[in-house]
Image (cartoon, rainbow, N blue to C red; front, side):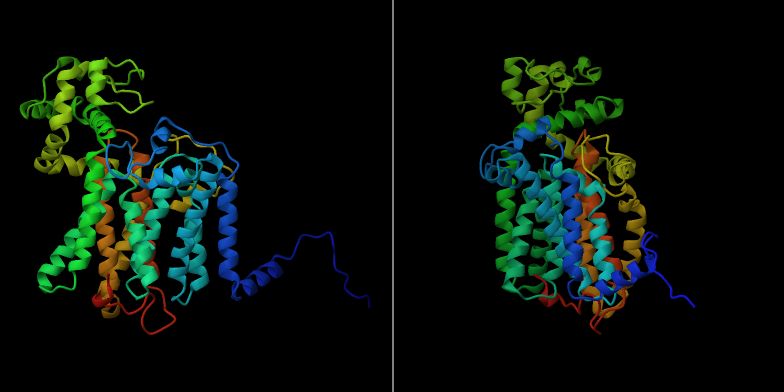
Length: 452
Protein backbone atom coordinates (compact mmCIF):
# COMPACT_ATOMS: atom_id res chain seq x y z
CA UNK A 1 0.00 0.00 0.00
CA UNK A 2 1.52 3.23 -1.15
CA UNK A 3 1.47 6.43 0.99
CA UNK A 4 -0.50 9.42 -0.14
CA UNK A 5 1.62 11.97 -1.96
CA UNK A 6 0.77 15.68 -1.89
CA UNK A 7 0.36 17.29 -5.30
CA UNK A 8 2.50 20.41 -5.44
CA UNK A 9 1.05 21.61 -8.75
CA UNK A 10 -2.62 21.32 -7.87
CA UNK A 11 -4.83 24.28 -6.99
CA UNK A 12 -4.63 25.37 -3.34
CA UNK A 13 -7.01 23.79 -0.86
CA UNK A 14 -9.47 26.65 -0.31
CA UNK A 15 -10.85 24.94 2.78
CA UNK A 16 -7.41 25.19 4.32
CA UNK A 17 -7.18 28.84 3.27
CA UNK A 18 -10.55 29.58 4.85
CA UNK A 19 -9.55 27.72 8.00
CA UNK A 20 -6.47 29.89 8.34
CA UNK A 21 -8.48 33.05 7.70
CA UNK A 22 -10.91 32.03 10.42
CA UNK A 23 -8.00 31.45 12.76
CA UNK A 24 -6.61 34.89 11.89
CA UNK A 25 -9.99 36.50 12.56
CA UNK A 26 -9.90 35.11 16.10
CA UNK A 27 -6.59 36.71 16.95
CA UNK A 28 -6.10 40.10 18.55
CA UNK A 29 -4.16 41.36 15.54
CA UNK A 30 -7.15 40.94 13.22
CA UNK A 31 -8.46 44.53 13.60
CA UNK A 32 -4.98 45.88 12.85
CA UNK A 33 -4.68 43.56 9.87
CA UNK A 34 -8.10 44.56 8.52
CA UNK A 35 -7.32 48.26 8.83
CA UNK A 36 -3.92 47.73 7.18
CA UNK A 37 -5.64 46.01 4.24
CA UNK A 38 -8.15 48.85 4.03
CA UNK A 39 -5.30 51.37 4.01
CA UNK A 40 -3.49 49.45 1.26
CA UNK A 41 -6.57 49.15 -0.96
CA UNK A 42 -7.43 52.82 -0.57
CA UNK A 43 -3.84 53.80 -1.28
CA UNK A 44 -3.64 51.79 -4.50
CA UNK A 45 -6.86 53.39 -5.72
CA UNK A 46 -5.51 56.94 -5.40
CA UNK A 47 -1.80 57.39 -4.71
CA UNK A 48 0.17 57.65 -7.95
CA UNK A 49 -2.97 58.17 -10.04
CA UNK A 50 -3.62 61.24 -12.24
CA UNK A 51 -4.68 64.24 -10.17
CA UNK A 52 -8.17 65.65 -10.46
CA UNK A 53 -7.63 69.38 -10.87
CA UNK A 54 -10.60 71.52 -11.87
CA UNK A 55 -11.42 75.25 -12.14
CA UNK A 56 -12.78 75.10 -8.58
CA UNK A 57 -9.48 73.71 -7.28
CA UNK A 58 -7.76 77.09 -7.45
CA UNK A 59 -10.18 78.57 -4.92
CA UNK A 60 -8.94 76.20 -2.21
CA UNK A 61 -5.37 77.47 -2.38
CA UNK A 62 -5.75 80.41 0.01
CA UNK A 63 -7.06 80.23 3.57
CA UNK A 64 -8.98 83.11 5.15
CA UNK A 65 -10.48 82.78 8.63
CA UNK A 66 -12.29 86.13 8.75
CA UNK A 67 -13.08 88.46 5.86
CA UNK A 68 -13.82 88.09 2.18
CA UNK A 69 -13.01 84.61 0.94
CA UNK A 70 -13.93 82.28 -1.89
CA UNK A 71 -14.09 79.17 0.33
CA UNK A 72 -14.72 78.31 3.95
CA UNK A 73 -11.37 77.72 5.63
CA UNK A 74 -11.33 73.99 6.57
CA UNK A 75 -10.12 72.56 3.23
CA UNK A 76 -7.86 75.55 2.35
CA UNK A 77 -6.19 75.18 5.76
CA UNK A 78 -5.02 71.66 4.94
CA UNK A 79 -4.03 72.62 1.41
CA UNK A 80 -2.06 75.64 2.63
CA UNK A 81 -0.04 73.45 4.99
CA UNK A 82 0.54 70.71 2.41
CA UNK A 83 1.23 72.43 -0.91
CA UNK A 84 2.47 69.40 -2.85
CA UNK A 85 -0.41 67.82 -4.78
CA UNK A 86 0.79 64.23 -4.29
CA UNK A 87 1.16 64.81 -0.57
CA UNK A 88 -2.40 66.14 -0.50
CA UNK A 89 -3.68 62.93 -2.06
CA UNK A 90 -1.77 60.89 0.53
CA UNK A 91 -3.15 63.13 3.28
CA UNK A 92 -6.72 62.69 2.05
CA UNK A 93 -6.24 58.91 2.00
CA UNK A 94 -4.80 58.87 5.53
CA UNK A 95 -7.57 61.05 6.99
CA UNK A 96 -10.18 58.89 5.26
CA UNK A 97 -8.61 55.71 6.63
CA UNK A 98 -8.50 57.21 10.11
CA UNK A 99 -12.17 58.26 10.02
CA UNK A 100 -13.50 54.95 8.74
CA UNK A 101 -11.24 52.94 11.05
CA UNK A 102 -12.57 54.86 14.06
CA UNK A 103 -16.12 54.14 12.95
CA UNK A 104 -15.37 50.46 12.34
CA UNK A 105 -13.70 50.01 15.73
CA UNK A 106 -16.51 51.83 17.53
CA UNK A 107 -19.23 49.70 15.98
CA UNK A 108 -17.35 46.44 16.40
CA UNK A 109 -16.07 46.74 19.97
CA UNK A 110 -19.38 46.03 21.73
CA UNK A 111 -21.16 43.57 19.42
CA UNK A 112 -20.95 39.81 19.50
CA UNK A 113 -20.12 39.84 15.78
CA UNK A 114 -17.30 42.32 16.11
CA UNK A 115 -15.14 41.04 13.25
CA UNK A 116 -18.04 40.88 10.81
CA UNK A 117 -19.10 44.41 11.70
CA UNK A 118 -15.51 45.66 11.45
CA UNK A 119 -15.10 44.22 7.96
CA UNK A 120 -18.55 45.35 6.80
CA UNK A 121 -17.85 48.93 7.86
CA UNK A 122 -14.45 49.02 6.17
CA UNK A 123 -15.89 47.45 3.00
CA UNK A 124 -18.54 50.19 2.87
CA UNK A 125 -15.69 52.68 3.24
CA UNK A 126 -14.10 51.21 0.10
CA UNK A 127 -17.06 52.04 -2.14
CA UNK A 128 -15.87 53.93 -5.24
CA UNK A 129 -18.44 56.64 -4.53
CA UNK A 130 -16.35 57.46 -1.44
CA UNK A 131 -12.70 56.85 -2.20
CA UNK A 132 -12.63 58.14 -5.78
CA UNK A 133 -12.50 61.71 -4.48
CA UNK A 134 -9.11 61.14 -2.85
CA UNK A 135 -7.41 62.16 -6.13
CA UNK A 136 -9.51 65.32 -6.52
CA UNK A 137 -8.27 68.71 -5.35
CA UNK A 138 -11.73 69.59 -4.08
CA UNK A 139 -13.63 69.44 -0.78
CA UNK A 140 -15.36 66.08 -1.20
CA UNK A 141 -12.71 63.68 0.13
CA UNK A 142 -11.96 65.58 3.34
CA UNK A 143 -15.59 66.62 3.68
CA UNK A 144 -16.74 62.99 3.75
CA UNK A 145 -14.00 62.03 6.22
CA UNK A 146 -14.79 64.93 8.56
CA UNK A 147 -18.49 64.03 8.53
CA UNK A 148 -17.87 60.33 9.23
CA UNK A 149 -15.52 61.27 12.07
CA UNK A 150 -18.09 63.65 13.58
CA UNK A 151 -20.78 60.96 13.52
CA UNK A 152 -18.38 58.50 15.16
CA UNK A 153 -17.42 60.94 17.90
CA UNK A 154 -21.05 61.95 18.44
CA UNK A 155 -21.81 58.33 19.31
CA UNK A 156 -18.59 58.02 21.32
CA UNK A 157 -19.22 60.98 23.61
CA UNK A 158 -22.56 59.46 24.54
CA UNK A 159 -20.94 56.74 26.62
CA UNK A 160 -17.48 58.18 27.21
CA UNK A 161 -16.53 60.87 29.70
CA UNK A 162 -13.05 61.18 28.24
CA UNK A 163 -11.95 64.77 27.80
CA UNK A 164 -9.90 63.76 24.77
CA UNK A 165 -13.01 62.39 23.04
CA UNK A 166 -14.94 65.58 23.74
CA UNK A 167 -12.13 67.79 22.46
CA UNK A 168 -11.95 65.61 19.32
CA UNK A 169 -15.72 66.04 18.91
CA UNK A 170 -15.40 69.82 18.95
CA UNK A 171 -12.55 69.72 16.43
CA UNK A 172 -14.55 67.46 14.11
CA UNK A 173 -17.62 69.68 14.46
CA UNK A 174 -15.69 72.82 13.55
CA UNK A 175 -14.06 71.12 10.56
CA UNK A 176 -17.46 69.94 9.29
CA UNK A 177 -19.09 73.34 9.75
CA UNK A 178 -16.32 75.14 7.87
CA UNK A 179 -16.14 72.72 4.95
CA UNK A 180 -19.03 74.17 2.92
CA UNK A 181 -21.52 77.04 3.49
CA UNK A 182 -24.49 74.65 3.62
CA UNK A 183 -22.87 72.84 6.56
CA UNK A 184 -23.87 75.80 8.72
CA UNK A 185 -27.18 73.96 9.15
CA UNK A 186 -25.32 71.53 11.43
CA UNK A 187 -24.27 74.17 13.95
CA UNK A 188 -27.63 75.94 13.59
CA UNK A 189 -29.59 72.83 14.58
CA UNK A 190 -27.18 72.01 17.41
CA UNK A 191 -27.51 75.52 18.79
CA UNK A 192 -31.30 75.37 18.53
CA UNK A 193 -31.41 72.07 20.46
CA UNK A 194 -29.04 73.42 23.13
CA UNK A 195 -31.16 76.55 23.60
CA UNK A 196 -34.37 74.51 23.85
CA UNK A 197 -32.81 72.17 26.43
CA UNK A 198 -31.53 75.01 28.59
CA UNK A 199 -34.90 76.78 28.44
CA UNK A 200 -36.64 73.62 29.67
CA UNK A 201 -34.21 72.85 32.47
CA UNK A 202 -33.87 76.51 33.50
CA UNK A 203 -30.43 75.78 34.90
CA UNK A 204 -26.93 77.05 34.30
CA UNK A 205 -25.46 73.69 33.32
CA UNK A 206 -25.96 74.10 29.59
CA UNK A 207 -24.95 77.77 29.35
CA UNK A 208 -21.25 77.09 28.48
CA UNK A 209 -22.35 74.77 25.66
CA UNK A 210 -24.74 77.40 24.27
CA UNK A 211 -22.01 80.05 24.43
CA UNK A 212 -19.50 77.80 22.65
CA UNK A 213 -21.98 76.83 19.93
CA UNK A 214 -22.99 80.49 19.53
CA UNK A 215 -19.35 81.45 18.95
CA UNK A 216 -18.94 78.81 16.25
CA UNK A 217 -22.24 79.88 14.66
CA UNK A 218 -21.21 83.54 14.66
CA UNK A 219 -17.86 82.66 13.10
CA UNK A 220 -19.62 80.65 10.40
CA UNK A 221 -22.04 83.49 9.71
CA UNK A 222 -19.11 85.88 9.26
CA UNK A 223 -17.53 83.45 6.80
CA UNK A 224 -20.83 83.23 4.94
CA UNK A 225 -20.99 87.01 4.59
CA UNK A 226 -17.45 87.00 3.20
CA UNK A 227 -18.28 84.27 0.69
CA UNK A 228 -20.02 86.65 -1.75
CA UNK A 229 -18.13 85.81 -4.97
CA UNK A 230 -19.16 82.16 -4.99
CA UNK A 231 -22.49 82.92 -3.34
CA UNK A 232 -23.41 85.28 -6.18
CA UNK A 233 -22.22 82.84 -8.84
CA UNK A 234 -24.20 80.06 -7.19
CA UNK A 235 -27.36 82.15 -7.17
CA UNK A 236 -27.03 82.74 -10.91
CA UNK A 237 -26.85 78.98 -11.47
CA UNK A 238 -30.06 78.56 -9.43
CA UNK A 239 -31.65 81.39 -11.42
CA UNK A 240 -30.65 79.72 -14.69
CA UNK A 241 -31.72 76.24 -13.59
CA UNK A 242 -35.00 76.92 -11.78
CA UNK A 243 -36.34 80.41 -12.45
CA UNK A 244 -35.83 81.51 -16.06
CA UNK A 245 -36.86 78.08 -17.34
CA UNK A 246 -40.28 78.18 -15.64
CA UNK A 247 -42.86 80.84 -16.48
CA UNK A 248 -44.68 80.71 -13.14
CA UNK A 249 -41.51 80.99 -11.09
CA UNK A 250 -40.20 83.75 -13.33
CA UNK A 251 -43.42 85.75 -12.93
CA UNK A 252 -43.29 85.33 -9.15
CA UNK A 253 -39.72 86.63 -8.96
CA UNK A 254 -40.57 89.59 -11.20
CA UNK A 255 -43.51 90.37 -8.93
CA UNK A 256 -41.09 90.32 -5.98
CA UNK A 257 -38.84 92.91 -7.61
CA UNK A 258 -36.54 91.04 -9.97
CA UNK A 259 -35.93 93.07 -13.16
CA UNK A 260 -37.98 91.73 -16.09
CA UNK A 261 -35.41 91.29 -18.86
CA UNK A 262 -36.71 89.16 -21.78
CA UNK A 263 -33.21 88.21 -22.96
CA UNK A 264 -32.64 86.38 -19.69
CA UNK A 265 -35.33 83.80 -20.55
CA UNK A 266 -33.33 82.51 -23.53
CA UNK A 267 -29.85 82.74 -22.04
CA UNK A 268 -29.17 79.13 -21.09
CA UNK A 269 -25.55 78.05 -21.03
CA UNK A 270 -22.17 79.57 -20.26
CA UNK A 271 -19.89 82.24 -21.67
CA UNK A 272 -16.11 82.19 -21.71
CA UNK A 273 -14.28 83.44 -18.64
CA UNK A 274 -12.85 86.94 -18.99
CA UNK A 275 -15.53 88.18 -21.38
CA UNK A 276 -17.68 90.01 -18.85
CA UNK A 277 -18.01 93.77 -19.10
CA UNK A 278 -15.71 95.42 -16.50
CA UNK A 279 -18.63 97.26 -14.90
CA UNK A 280 -20.53 93.98 -14.59
CA UNK A 281 -17.48 92.14 -13.26
CA UNK A 282 -17.02 94.77 -10.56
CA UNK A 283 -20.50 93.96 -9.27
CA UNK A 284 -20.45 90.18 -9.68
CA UNK A 285 -16.82 89.66 -8.63
CA UNK A 286 -16.71 86.40 -10.56
CA UNK A 287 -14.14 84.01 -9.04
CA UNK A 288 -11.06 83.59 -11.20
CA UNK A 289 -11.15 80.71 -13.66
CA UNK A 290 -14.92 80.29 -13.51
CA UNK A 291 -17.11 80.35 -16.60
CA UNK A 292 -19.98 82.84 -16.14
CA UNK A 293 -23.53 81.64 -16.87
CA UNK A 294 -24.91 83.44 -19.92
CA UNK A 295 -27.69 84.86 -17.80
CA UNK A 296 -25.12 87.18 -16.16
CA UNK A 297 -24.31 88.87 -19.47
CA UNK A 298 -27.96 88.94 -20.57
CA UNK A 299 -29.13 90.49 -17.30
CA UNK A 300 -26.41 93.12 -17.26
CA UNK A 301 -25.76 95.46 -14.37
CA UNK A 302 -29.48 95.90 -13.65
CA UNK A 303 -30.02 92.25 -12.80
CA UNK A 304 -26.60 91.99 -11.14
CA UNK A 305 -27.39 94.76 -8.67
CA UNK A 306 -30.67 93.05 -7.75
CA UNK A 307 -28.95 89.65 -7.35
CA UNK A 308 -26.32 91.04 -4.99
CA UNK A 309 -28.84 93.05 -2.94
CA UNK A 310 -31.94 90.84 -2.87
CA UNK A 311 -31.28 87.59 -4.72
CA UNK A 312 -30.92 85.04 -1.91
CA UNK A 313 -33.45 86.77 0.34
CA UNK A 314 -36.08 86.55 -2.39
CA UNK A 315 -35.24 82.93 -3.15
CA UNK A 316 -35.55 81.90 0.50
CA UNK A 317 -38.95 83.61 0.57
CA UNK A 318 -39.96 81.62 -2.51
CA UNK A 319 -38.93 78.33 -0.87
CA UNK A 320 -40.87 79.19 2.28
CA UNK A 321 -44.04 80.16 0.41
CA UNK A 322 -43.91 77.26 -2.08
CA UNK A 323 -43.27 74.17 0.07
CA UNK A 324 -44.90 71.79 -2.41
CA UNK A 325 -42.59 72.89 -5.20
CA UNK A 326 -39.58 72.63 -2.88
CA UNK A 327 -40.51 69.12 -1.73
CA UNK A 328 -41.05 68.04 -5.33
CA UNK A 329 -37.58 69.31 -6.18
CA UNK A 330 -36.07 67.31 -3.34
CA UNK A 331 -37.96 64.20 -4.40
CA UNK A 332 -37.00 64.52 -8.07
CA UNK A 333 -33.29 64.79 -7.25
CA UNK A 334 -33.15 62.19 -4.46
CA UNK A 335 -32.26 59.15 -6.58
CA UNK A 336 -30.00 60.98 -9.07
CA UNK A 337 -27.97 62.45 -6.19
CA UNK A 338 -28.13 59.92 -3.36
CA UNK A 339 -27.56 57.00 -5.73
CA UNK A 340 -25.89 58.40 -8.85
CA UNK A 341 -25.91 55.88 -11.70
CA UNK A 342 -22.35 56.71 -12.77
CA UNK A 343 -19.48 59.09 -12.14
CA UNK A 344 -19.68 61.03 -15.38
CA UNK A 345 -20.56 64.23 -13.50
CA UNK A 346 -16.93 64.43 -12.28
CA UNK A 347 -14.48 62.38 -14.37
CA UNK A 348 -11.61 61.07 -12.25
CA UNK A 349 -8.93 58.47 -12.94
CA UNK A 350 -8.44 56.00 -10.11
CA UNK A 351 -6.64 52.73 -9.67
CA UNK A 352 -8.36 49.41 -9.04
CA UNK A 353 -11.53 49.74 -6.96
CA UNK A 354 -14.35 47.46 -5.90
CA UNK A 355 -17.77 47.53 -7.55
CA UNK A 356 -20.05 50.54 -7.15
CA UNK A 357 -22.71 48.10 -5.89
CA UNK A 358 -21.03 48.20 -2.46
CA UNK A 359 -22.77 51.52 -1.92
CA UNK A 360 -26.20 49.89 -2.42
CA UNK A 361 -29.40 51.86 -3.22
CA UNK A 362 -30.08 54.62 -0.74
CA UNK A 363 -33.71 53.60 -0.28
CA UNK A 364 -32.68 50.17 1.01
CA UNK A 365 -30.38 51.82 3.53
CA UNK A 366 -33.01 54.36 4.54
CA UNK A 367 -35.81 51.82 5.04
CA UNK A 368 -33.53 49.42 6.92
CA UNK A 369 -32.17 52.20 9.08
CA UNK A 370 -35.61 53.59 9.94
CA UNK A 371 -36.86 50.12 10.87
CA UNK A 372 -33.82 49.53 13.08
CA UNK A 373 -34.26 52.96 14.63
CA UNK A 374 -37.91 52.23 15.45
CA UNK A 375 -36.97 48.96 17.16
CA UNK A 376 -34.21 50.72 19.13
CA UNK A 377 -36.68 53.34 20.31
CA UNK A 378 -38.80 50.55 21.84
CA UNK A 379 -35.88 49.32 23.94
CA UNK A 380 -35.51 51.30 27.18
CA UNK A 381 -31.73 50.84 27.27
CA UNK A 382 -31.30 52.12 23.72
CA UNK A 383 -33.76 55.02 23.55
CA UNK A 384 -31.10 57.65 24.15
CA UNK A 385 -28.99 56.12 21.38
CA UNK A 386 -32.03 56.02 19.08
CA UNK A 387 -32.72 59.69 19.85
CA UNK A 388 -29.14 60.61 19.03
CA UNK A 389 -29.20 58.71 15.72
CA UNK A 390 -32.57 60.28 14.89
CA UNK A 391 -31.12 63.72 15.57
CA UNK A 392 -28.23 63.07 13.20
CA UNK A 393 -30.65 61.69 10.60
CA UNK A 394 -32.76 64.84 10.84
CA UNK A 395 -29.65 66.98 10.48
CA UNK A 396 -28.63 64.95 7.42
CA UNK A 397 -32.08 65.47 5.90
CA UNK A 398 -31.92 69.23 6.43
CA UNK A 399 -28.39 69.25 5.03
CA UNK A 400 -29.59 67.42 1.93
CA UNK A 401 -32.42 69.91 1.45
CA UNK A 402 -30.14 72.92 1.90
CA UNK A 403 -27.57 71.50 -0.51
CA UNK A 404 -30.04 70.62 -3.26
CA UNK A 405 -32.16 73.76 -3.05
CA UNK A 406 -29.23 76.19 -3.01
CA UNK A 407 -27.33 74.66 -5.94
CA UNK A 408 -28.15 74.98 -9.61
CA UNK A 409 -25.51 72.59 -10.95
CA UNK A 410 -23.38 69.59 -9.91
CA UNK A 411 -25.95 68.28 -7.45
CA UNK A 412 -24.42 64.77 -7.45
CA UNK A 413 -21.06 66.09 -6.29
CA UNK A 414 -22.46 68.48 -3.73
CA UNK A 415 -24.72 65.83 -2.16
CA UNK A 416 -22.05 63.11 -1.88
CA UNK A 417 -21.41 63.74 1.83
CA UNK A 418 -25.13 63.45 2.56
CA UNK A 419 -25.30 60.24 0.53
CA UNK A 420 -22.52 58.74 2.65
CA UNK A 421 -24.15 59.84 5.91
CA UNK A 422 -27.42 58.12 4.94
CA UNK A 423 -25.56 54.82 4.75
CA UNK A 424 -23.42 55.38 7.84
CA UNK A 425 -26.37 56.26 10.08
CA UNK A 426 -28.38 53.30 8.81
CA UNK A 427 -25.39 51.03 9.47
CA UNK A 428 -25.09 52.30 13.04
CA UNK A 429 -28.79 51.66 13.70
CA UNK A 430 -28.62 48.17 12.21
CA UNK A 431 -25.50 47.22 14.19
CA UNK A 432 -27.19 48.42 17.36
CA UNK A 433 -29.76 45.63 16.94
CA UNK A 434 -27.17 42.87 16.88
CA UNK A 435 -26.53 40.72 19.97
CA UNK A 436 -24.16 42.45 22.33
CA UNK A 437 -21.21 41.31 24.38
CA UNK A 438 -22.72 42.76 27.55
CA UNK A 439 -26.16 43.24 29.03
CA UNK A 440 -25.98 46.98 28.38
CA UNK A 441 -26.59 46.70 24.65
CA UNK A 442 -24.42 46.95 21.61
CA UNK A 443 -23.46 50.58 22.14
CA UNK A 444 -23.94 50.71 25.85
CA UNK A 445 -26.76 51.79 28.10
CA UNK A 446 -27.02 55.45 27.34
CA UNK A 447 -28.48 58.27 29.36
CA UNK A 448 -29.23 61.85 28.45
CA UNK A 449 -27.09 63.07 31.33
CA UNK A 450 -23.98 61.77 29.65
CA UNK A 451 -24.71 63.48 26.34
CA UNK A 452 -22.56 66.51 25.54
